Length: 117
Image 1 (tube, rainbow, N blue to C red):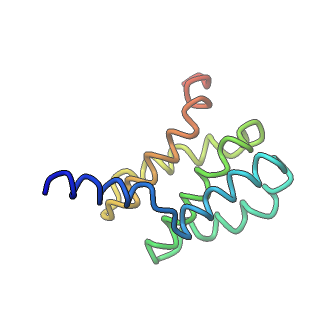
Image 2: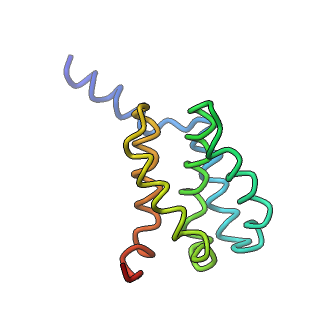
Image 3: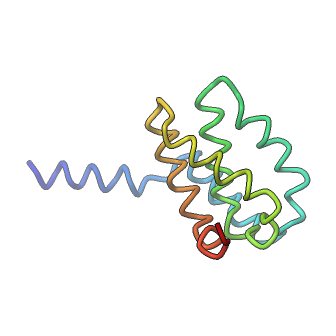
């Protein structure tokens, strides 16, 4: 019975859903187009990051994390404001906001580690 529960947990982790596909797509697009997507994407995300609906905020944080690798070299202008904001979301009432913020911050860890305090 315990093995069945573990198999079900593994299936949930491995299951691809629309959310995961969208994040993967953004990761690929950011890797291909790099800074070219930022003028279009960042204003949209900025509006979504302050949305009253926590699901909308969570999706914007997911998108920020998804573009990290492809756009890292060009995010330097935005990260001094973005990283403290992401840190502040670690105390959000919603666990999924806190969780996705940890993941997004981990995607920008290289920038944080190489930036003087």
